[in-house]
Length: 390
Image 1 (cartoon, rainbow, N blue to C red):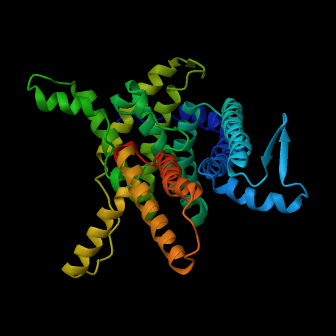
Image 2: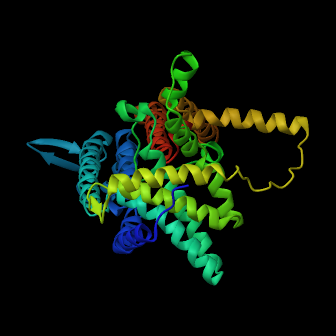
């Protein structure tokens, strides 16, 4: 069984120490959302409320109270300050300009931040090796914080491994591209096995003559089974020496995939190191059986309650549906219903209220704006989920 030599272990350790601080700064930068990006949804909501005349209506009621003159003279034309459409024009154009400005400014700031980040191959190696480093430290001093850190780093490593061996459709279909810094692995869908190389599995299923070499097949199976053999062992602190050895081998392979590292170290090239470490990783991982934390027994629910909960979940899924039209119609229908019910209550207790063009605009435009806003926010939340959930 190929093992990482002391010389190569020192080589990996030296490289990890040289980039550890920079990787930590990159992680903190990626997790900190820029304040300009945070303002974008707020500015869009203000623009939407201006567009459907909610803000103009408020301004047309409040502004005339602060001026003696009730009219505004523009190019010889007298325009009443109580005109909703005057304030619609005044509020819509600046709020739209503000939203566009914040989007462009936020994109520019994000792009500048990205240039200071450590490249993804370096981050992938650093996360993997940091798990090895934290396990070794825990075995020395027994402090739980090191295992907590190892588990968190493994989650990040798992995310970047998925992106490294990402499915074929993610490479060649830009419409399904995801934000790489916000992409996460959902434990319920990817906690047991990675869904790597789906096209290879499909070719095997469709064509009996399709074959891959035995070494390649072993590598594919090892990578797919990796989550089922590592994550829960880290959480339960089981077989840590074996896990550490496997991840050290994987770190060696990930090191060989970094473009700018020295291509030779003594008599061995970095490519030879990567191949030897990959073979060692496959061999050592095959000795570890799948492991899962024992789950606590779940008290069964009554069939009626289970049916009600299931129906409620299925119905509520409409508001986060992957289909944009379905999601929009669900939010539009809900806000339209709430608007009509609210209006009916107001007319019941205040019969003197007249349904004018402004109220009609609110009834028609308000739900449309709310629907668009809700769909936009829903799309942003889904970019943080695994493509398997999309």
